[in-house]
Length: 271
Image (cartoon, rainbow, N blue to C red):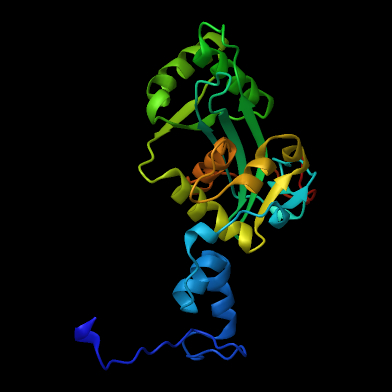
């Protein structure tokens, strides 16, 4: 551009190629690594190292997932070696018809002290083309999913087909005598932006875990086939639901059992 003629570009990355911080008093290496862990490699590269990575080059490598086979201990609020501070149950609904998007309900646990996230289970739902009440059928599946895990809070995405789903869900729960609390959410960002901004930072920094049962779902195939610019014929229903769950404030989980305590009785009394 003519008005920039003669100007030079000054770029000072927060840390040099040899690992020397540009402003060690403000941003020592420990703080720089903390920033990298929070924002993920793509944002850190563009914002802190001034090396832009086009979003269309980003991929979601399943090899970055950390798999585990532990179950949650709600009394101690622990999942393996992690203290669990919250959970999110998120449902991204669809009609579930054949050759359409799947309906996906995701259960996440979080350790917000270390910023680790655990994809504990994903329920993919499809219904028969002859099913007269596909949404009621899915509500029953989700309620059964919640009942087995003693969950009573759920976030439902109400874009499109999900608009009337909370009322159907409440009616189905009432018929079962099952108490639920529904949070409604509408998304305005594009699906690719939601997936990229929610999943890539935790995946690229080694903080995204998945239960071994996730291997038996379409989720890993979705990761392998996903691209920010979209790929014809590739589904991303589970990815979108996981992204929605990561972005939601979690339901707080606290230990319900403390350690054993010893009490001493005063036996020096007169009858």
